[in-house]
Image: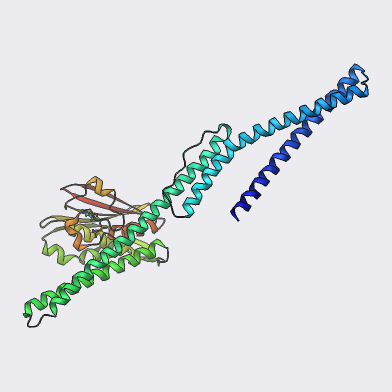
Length: 359
Ligand code: ADP
């Protein structure tokens, strides 16, 4: 089957060369006929039959030779300057279809076609890079999800086994039962976050826009952390502009404020402070959440919006690295922006800016 295909391909390329050869031969013959006719007319020469026959034979041989040379030269040009680079691209594309996204093509230097071919090659390399990035994200995501799901399950299993001990003191029984509850809560929150993120990323979660008072929502969200700031003796300052209304999905936006606030309280040590501000002008609504926590080093800052990324492992048990990924996705959907300013040891400020036109 393969040899038959190859044979057909060879015959097809021979067909091309034959057509090219005949075309060149036809053009040369026409030119020569015209030239000889015009020359004999202007010089008024009458050729004998023998002379015509000898000249015709010599001309025929020359036409065949020149056409054959032109065909060979064109064949070489096509082979090196077109077929080879195209074959390289085809082979690389075949590798991609088989799942090898590491393939890249070197630029080619083939004279006049350079620019076009190299543009195709450049686009191809970018596509391969994108695909390999997506593939890495996919495999990392699966590995991360499996790991994150297994950890609380293992904890539940261990404490479940301990709970089965006979004559367990009441105090221990409560302790183990609490640990099981905490682990199941963590797992439920992880699954909820994964599902939400998945829905947001696949555009299956349709924001329900309603007009509501953002100032009120921010105040409520902040109050939800009263028990934390009292427990950690954190100083609170709120500078919330009154009567700021937005048209947005309140549930999605409350997810943003809650994630940013919970991080601010989580990373701020006892006796620190957290500030929340809401400002509004004709163009933008700006919400800032500042803390005097541990701060974010620049190399960590680059990754904080990635899924499952946890820069500060000392607090890893209290989160799953999905909070800021969710926040970023929601802010993107609202066509807003989020930025971070942070200094290690001094604290961080997360600023969300929403355009008045979009909310
Ligand atoms: P999680 O809080 O569950 O670890 P997030 O996605 O909310 O996940 O945050 C990712 C990382 O960003 C955190 O692990 C932490 O390193 C960093 N981070 C986020 N908010 C703050 C903050 N207010 N102060 C210091 N680091 C922060």
